Amino acid sequence: MSWFRFWAGMTVLAALLWAPPPAHTERTPIRIVAFGDSLTAGLGVAAHESYPAQLQRRLDEGGYRTVVVNAGVSGDTSAGGLRRVAWVLKSNPDVVILELGANDGLRGLSLTQTEENLERIIQRLLDAGTRVVLAGMKLPPNYGSSYREGFEQIFPALARRYNVTLIPFFLEGVAASATLNQADGIHPTGEGYRVIVDHVFSALERSGLLKENRDPGARPPAASPGSDRRTGTPKMD
Image (cartoon, rainbow, N blue to C red):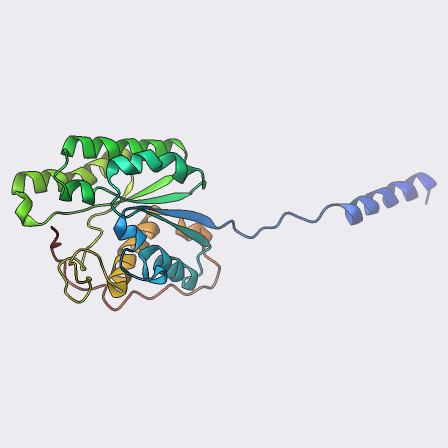
């Protein structure tokens, strides 16, 4: 063997030995921000019973690599949410679950303004490369059919316009249930939030993001016992 070949071989071997280790292939957790009002904040229940906290546990149990952030502010409206968008985006979310507008409806605010606020929020999130899951809301009958129907149409209309995932009714199966709501008849109990997490989890699966961040061999999480309860209409003042 010539000295040239010997040193060439040694150079290749040294390069292999001293090369930096391969990049870590572990999946980066998906950052999910729950962006909403008191229904997201978990007013009246312990922090671990709020829907974002329960959603985190549900995702963990299913083997999904995620970080769920609770960005709920009690009493927030669509206008307040619009003012908070920049703050939400600072956390670099992959997905935002947008649950706002209920307080607008309960206060009888302008439907046009509510829709415009929600639309601007969605636009800013999408422009930042964030996937959006939009939570639909409903109002009780005493608000009048015209206002109520106009309010409820806002959410599916925006979902179609911007091609975002829609939860048709965030409180599906929970609204008007005496056992799943607190004494105020508005805010869910911890058990009520378990039912809501079923809807949110299903919506996240439809978004297509969870599939890519699930650990191999993990079992799918079981649905909560209350997931088949019938839909009610919220009793709100």
